[in-house]
Amino acid sequence: MAETVEETTTPQPKIGPIVKRLKGFAGAHGGATAVVEYLGQKGARIVLVGSDGRWGDQVVAGGVEAARTACDEAGVPVKDEWERDLVTGIKTGSYEWDYMGGHQTPRGGGTR
Image (cartoon, rainbow, N blue to C red; front, top):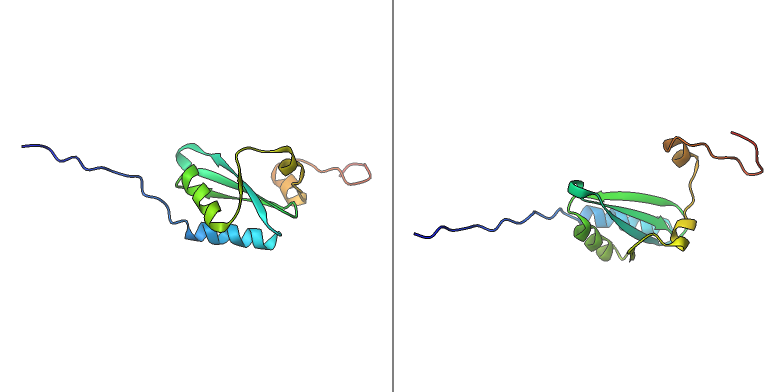
């Protein structure tokens, strides 16, 4: 008697809520561009850069393919790598500097 082998597939996460958040971010920031980063078993990280320079991120458990699908469904273009224009357009505020443990020098010089 032959054995039956069942194929197992990795369940894809429900990306509807992720698509909704991506659309919300893009709408609030005049559009957005994404870069998808592989996180290993955790999945993938979508880093969004808004047209106004604000940025945010979203972790997707389903990996790079699920992250790219979410971006496509949200109408957010995905760059294959960090390009100079994208990086230089990012604006960080005091929250980000404090979160990263750094200190931002105020405009006009001096120390914080």
